[in-house]
Image 1 (cartoon, helix red, strand yellow):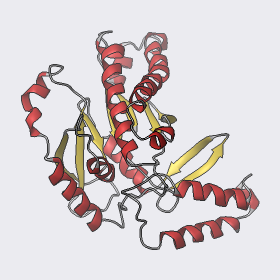
Image 2: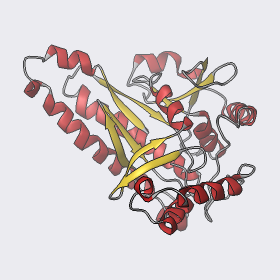
Image 3: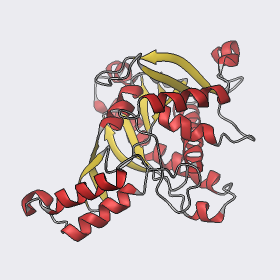
Length: 298
């Protein structure tokens, strides 16, 4: 999940006499937004009915910052947790925008993007520093960051594979309202006819005249689910069907064809790497780490 500050360059330029004029906001943002997100996650965790799923819910952590952007990672052991994480993320954006920006009359906003990526076949992690991963790379991360450029203060963009996870269990008591902006050709993402742009509104009724103007344009969730299924089936070599290898998972359990053999190949290749490339991890430890990665979507 990525959250980025809108209007940051203009704000810095308006206060360019000294960094002390604009640094307090960024110190607050980098410290306070993660706290705001943790608070929302803690609140929503209490509403998870299944005790096993609740006990496996782990709050998102900051993966890294890129300029004015914060990128979070969260592990999914059950597909319904995607719904919880995204609701917490949307609410954190709403609250921080109100308290940290609007009430302080700052000429800035926030925009968000969310996507999923499975490991270690289609995507990979590079190195570890303590308990933190230095870098994640792979085509689904490329797609996620490309989508983030299309987000806005109103539009929380979600990847099509994440949309499918969410749509399979849209909460009837508090459903997302999905919008569809057609397709866009994303740089170096070779999908015929372009990649679907699906988004969730971060505005509420009464908060914005724009929301009240066109809030009836959201999609029929059942039709959007059929579209997401069809898109993923047609483009499974580029955007793999999501699955979660966890004893808790009940819906997305089917692994892609040849997944286990591909995982065995990666383990075997890693064990043959020279120690200076493999680093401190021993072959057995690396194999265990690959097993852990294969059981999660981040």
